[in-house]
Image 1 (cartoon, rainbow, N blue to C red):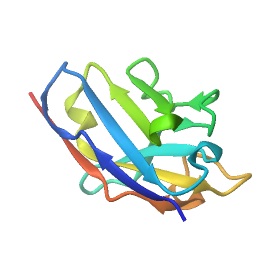
Image 2: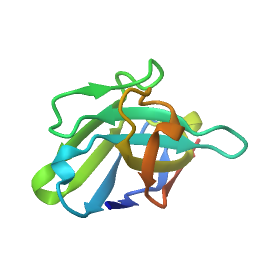
Image 3: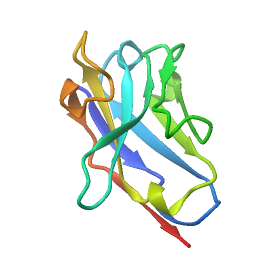
Image 4: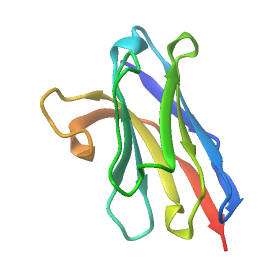
Length: 125
């Protein structure tokens, strides 16, 4: 089974940028889609990006389009989430997930089997 480790979170000023990483260990990572999610205190976990195994297909919610970019380097077993023009509302714990249940909505956290431990993003105003 794959294992995931996120990194790259931290304190950023509003308007700044951040690149989060999700490094996988395990075989055949290039065969697995990856989703990025975030969860702020008191809120539900929400999907912010999806990328297919080969990287040719991506998806974002309307709230993330234009500021969030997901991409991957399968040679490094790593998926990245670039966030630009950070807003206070982007502050949350960010998680990556893999092993998506076929036929379910990517933005449904319950449709992913393997999760990383999360990385915290704080945005100062």
